[in-house]
Length: 159
Image 1 (cartoon, rainbow, N blue to C red):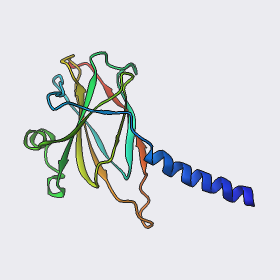
Image 2 (image 1 turned 30 degrees about the vertical axis):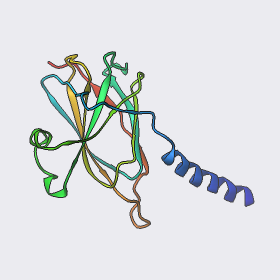
Image 3 (image 1 turned 120 degrees about the vertical axis):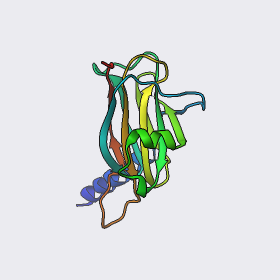
């Protein structure tokens, strides 16, 4: 019984420690921009409370040689249903991250709210950009929200 309690505490506290561990992504410079080809690829919205991690790769799970960038835009609840192109054209860049050379990234430390992520290449390589709307929420006992979520982006060549 005592072992089971200790193991349970380790799992619970270990999961919290993972959620608070540092992220490998580096901040991007203001002049770093996302480049994309001719198609908008949008993933469905996801929610989490602490951090999102994963990899940015090409369709064959290889990191892109020219480097990738994840640009974060913050938007309000009243802009939820708005077209992505219009939103991107109007919003100011909130933060931007450069994934590691192997494509791994981690986004943490954003305050609760709604965000639009723009994922593309740092140099023009004719890969399509991807967009993902995320919502960071405070976790509560009544609502179970995952603290850490894994999401991979596979950028594909434009047509």
